[in-house]
Image (cartoon, rainbow, N blue to C red; front, side, top):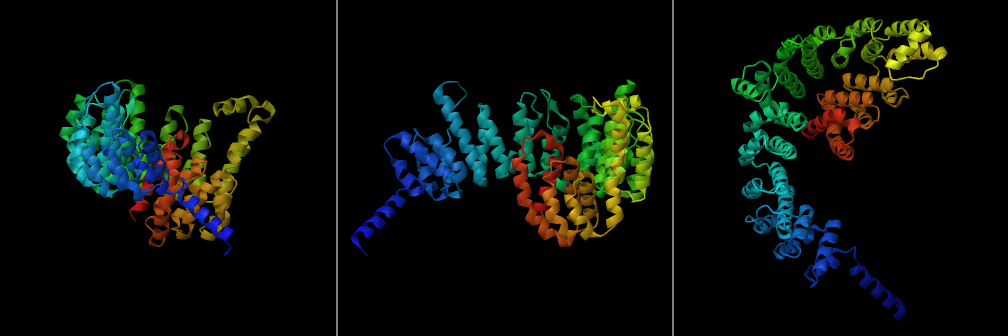
Length: 537
């Protein structure tokens, strides 16, 4: 080899070894005399995910100039070997205060708590429990969340106390509820039942509490059935003392029982379909009665309880705007139950009443009804096309479709119904043929896509799992909801389990990417529960 070529190779190798992309470059700078360089090295090692550097980083927990940076780096890089150095680095003498030293110490304690939570070693439990009682809110938040990650059962009394503490900040209560669910100890059930109906400073804890109860699984069923039937005197006394309306308890307990899908809850939920609230104000009584009934219907729909079809059908009304939510929930529940005969009853109700409610009933009918209903939907469309222009404009305005040309109003109104014939035509063509329904998941009509998802789920089509998982990411909420339900039904199909389990990570990634997107909030709550089910297969 020529001397010049050899020199270039040596020079290139030397540059590569000293590259900022090489963790060794930054590890060497952890001992630099300048604390700014040490801090920079910690930041870069974290970015490079240099887990092999964790032991060297842990040594800097004794360095007051970069202790906070070291704790932050160990949140991502630390492992079991770093637990004891992190525990030793906690300052339990610090109080609350606004001076820079106190603030820095509390920030460091919070970062240490987060690192310990991420590592998940039970040995950290006692220290995290002490930090959960700290005076600094930031430290408490980090420690309370970490207790859930570490699954410290001894923390249940402290976390339960936070839930019931009226002075606790709402965010801290939310973190405590989530951690109780992660820990999964039945001793947490009373606090979670409280969290289910509590509100503080206008903040509801139901989303976190209902999910925590769902994570509890079978252990939560009997306690929820008891409070749904006023058979838990301790809870009843607490609810009275805290001014919690019975209707709120019945409604929210029904929703969680629907999540848990335990057949023991069916008789209780059937009874709640007839609930009448005793409030002396008729409007309030109707509102609360509908709330309980619609959530009971939703739960029975999730459970696909065929015996509930007729009483749920009785809740569907197109005559009064005040019944919109009740009709929506009941109609959706009938779709999930899938008794084809109920679709004809829904179509009959779609022929008269308030336009929006009629469309709700008609759309539900075409999502599971027989193809013969296509004649009915076209007859409704024809009738609408012959209405008075003024009346058509008025009805379209109620659908938030203002500024419609009077000459086109009735045709546009007829189209709202006419287009609902498409899923029925798809049902006529495909019947129960799975290969025919699979491409319908890409149809241009969202209602056809939703019907396809439901049909594939009902058919137990294991081969549809990848396409259904993709449909869970659709912008159209109707299609998302159908895909989530279909995948949930497929969890009972042995041939689908491997594909479903493999899909779990992609759903985790989707939920993370869509966190905070309000438009997907409701359906993504169902998606979260589905992902948990898939991870447990």
